[in-house]
Image 1 (cartoon, rainbow, N blue to C red):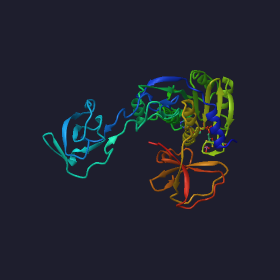
Image 2: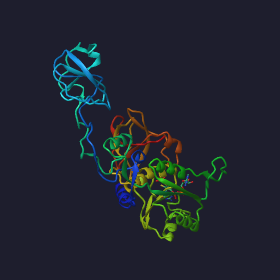
Image 3: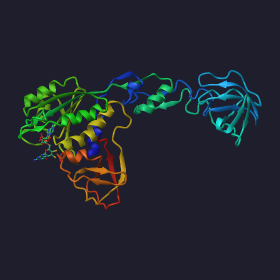
Image 4: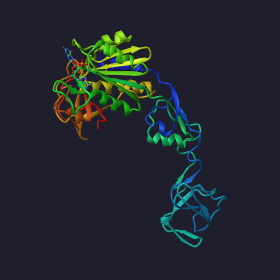
Length: 390
Ligand SMILES: Nc1nc2c(c(=O)[nH]1)N[C@H]1C(S)=C(S)[C@@H](COP(=O)(O)OP(=O)(O)OC[C@H]3O[C@@H](n4cnc5c(N)ncnc54)[C@H](O)[C@@H]3O)O[C@H]1N2
Ligand code: MOO
């Protein structure tokens, strides 16, 4: 059985590489930069006022000889004893090196004096290029593009950004017991929830998702389902990954022409996870239990999708939190305990069954417990993954 780290390394190494496209900066939000981004301009492009008031030269009093507004700079240089009215973001006129804010000024006609302590040299002035200068590296390849990065790229002179295309992901529900209509679910059935759950996780990352199934527990039906996913970059199944007589994912994958990379990981939940490949397609066979599907998607599928999209940081980040209660020793598989973090400490959910959806939905983190980890007492540190869960 592979360790979680070994299986993650395989999931990242086998991720298909998506082609690069150029998107409008705002449309690139949620993607990852395909190459380093350098500034095409300097910001600020000149010394600017940071406040509304007066650009001044000398110790005062001053004569106000004009105005510098954002978008309409004052044209000439000031000499000692002169001031111009200035607004936030306006160019500092030549000769002026500080701003007297209007709250500290008294103006009578063109006559201006300071009513408080004099501003020091450079006060309330944003110097040319303090944010970045033309040619500076502003965002590295693999950076995630969010709202702040969109604004930075545009300010650096880029209306479009090179990003990797979002993968097409085929999500296949499989199992004879699955019903597509939750309102009309016979006693021998359960609603097919995994496909919708996985689609939610993938769509949040910008993937295009194609839903297939539910496919019955029939080898040929599964092979046909795989064949219909021929165009997908990733194929994700849930269910039928284990050892039962009706767990047909592995044989169906082989018949379709995919080759198994690994099956089974030393983790709980999620042990029967498998990965296979067919040409450039990467296939994840997730265990059917809903919590196992969620945890393996979080730890393997989403990182692999990030790798395909060119992310510099692919694996979820571990954070150290304080345990709200004692935790027993770890077992022979790495364990991912569903828990709640209230801002002070983290507490495991009551049910750790791998089908317990109510406990999963009430959780906002996974407590990661290593193989044979020592028991810990309340108040001690535990490593956790924070979940964007709801
Ligand atoms: N003898 C053994 N039995 C099992 C083992 C084992 O090692 N030896 N492993 C167990 C573990 S761990 C897991 S996890 C499950 C995984 O089994 P499968 O991946 O084969 O999943 P299924 O048997 O098809 O289904 C399990 C469970 O999940 C429900 N399910 C399946 N698909 C969906 C879906 N799309 N939406 C909602 N729920 C779904 C299904 O109805 C079952 O209740 O195997 C253990 N058994
Ligand atoms: O490992 Mo299974 O995923 O416990 O339910």
